[in-house]
Structures are given as C-alpha cells and as structure tokens.
Image (cartoon, rainbow over all chains, first blue to last red; front, side, top):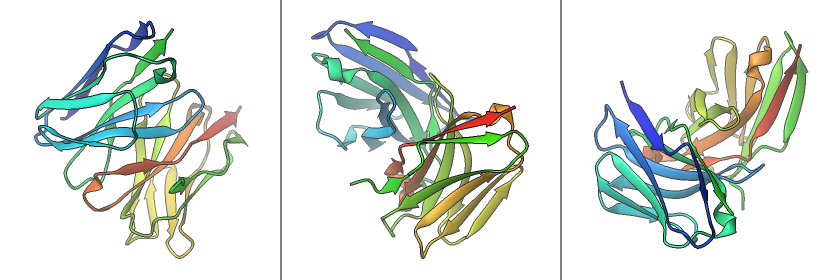
Amino acid sequence: SQTIHQWPATLVQPVGSPLSLECTVEGTSNPNLYWYRQAAGRGLQLLFYSVGIGQISSEVPQNLSASRPQDRQFILSSKKLLLSDSGFYLCAWSGTAGEKLFFGSGTQLSVL
Amino acid sequence: DQQVKQNSPSLSVQEGRISILNCDYTNSMFDYFLWYKKYPAEGPTFLISISSIKDKNEDGRFTVFLNKSAKHLSLHIVPSQPGDSAVYFCAASGTYGQNFVFGPGTRLSVLP
C-alpha cells in the first residue's frame, strides 16, 4: 500500500532563517506531488505541484520554493523565512489519473 | 476569485440527526469532486468523491449529491456522530488531477 511521510511535525524558526521540509511517498511510482498551506483559520492553499522529477509548477508567488530531486521526494524550501510564512504545511500525492489526493500528517511551522 | 465555495463556516447538529454540508463551484471544467475531513494538527483524510458524470455516490453514512446545472454539491452524513466533529473541505479537480482546488472548509460540531 502507498504511504506518505512528512517531517518534521512541528518547527519553530526565527525570521530570516532558512527552511527545508521534506516529503516522501512509498508504494507508488511517478506520483503527482503537492505542497499545500493552511494558514490559521483558513482553507487549503495550493503552493506547488509537480508531475515529474524537476517539474515544478508554482500557484502563488511567495517566499518559498519547491524541488523534486527524486521521483517520490518533494522538498519545500525558503532562504529567509517571513512571519507570514507561519502555517500548517501539507504534502500530498495523487496518481496520474488524479481521482484522489492523499495527504501527509502535516508540519506546523511557527516563524517568530 | 474562489472557484470552490463553502458558504457556511460552521454547522451544529444534534447526534443522530442528518448533517448537510454544501459546496458551490464556478468552473464547469471540473471532473471530480471530493470531500475531506480534517482534525486539528492532522492532514485531511479522504471521505468520498463523485465523478461529474454521476449525480449521487454513497458510502455507508456518507452520501454526496452533485447538481451540475446548479454547480452545487452536498455531503449528507446520516446519522451524525460526535466523532464526525471536524472541519470538512470540499475539493474539485480537472482531468488528470493536476490541480485540486479546495473550499475554505465548514466546521461541523455534532452535539451529544
């Protein structure tokens, strides 16, 4: 069966520090991969999605970037965090048919 | 412009009664519609979905209805249980699911 791993679960970072969140998927090949963010009291905002290695689409201009160095690995990064980057970050995957999206357990990021 | 709308931020229902969560969309090109349930500090979990070629899909206590002409779908939970208390997200995707668009969510509280 397929599983998705996302870490860390919680992270507290000072403003201006770098960020790296990692996500890996097991049990499937060539998945579509996604990064979503849920700000406090808000819905799910799509940040990036990827349909293959090195292929990244950005949905929202921001202080973040994403990379997909391997088929089942998706990384969310920032060179310098802003206060507004605080939120709950979710990695997700879907098959290429796109009928269903599966989420990781999330990372609660607090930028202070 | 929100493509997927959930106009009720919250809903309270007595245990054993029916919960009806509503969702409206604007993009007629969406092919799949999904409902997710989310507890605090956890990733959303998939509940039920429906293809645009159907008007109803049922899974246990959960039924989703789709009215394409009205661009409206609803999730019915019968009977409602206290464990159903969570935030429910409506989502829609196009062909190949490269872009899942989520509504802002509805917080359901099932009162014992």
